[in-house]
Length: 80
Image (cartoon, rainbow, N blue to C red; front, side):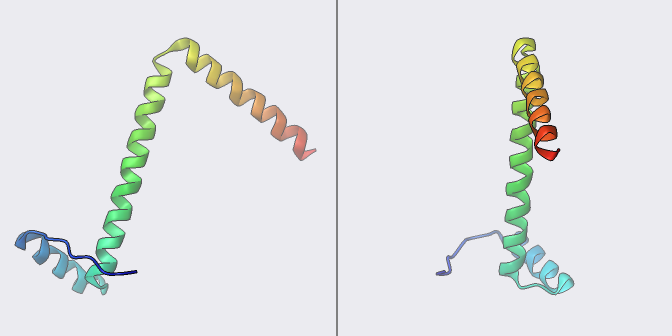
């Protein structure tokens, strides 16, 4: 995969460099890890917001719970 250049502030570079040394990781590996962590946090945040919106609609939330029960029944039958 070709490398890309990303501009960061001197403060961020200094922090990245210090973390890289402290954790024994390359700056590239450290950036990859940080980006993946942020991506996952954002995914969970968006998922939580979607569930909160779903729960705010009683009818839709009831449908969700009913569907979960249906799936639980299917799963238990398949396990037997």
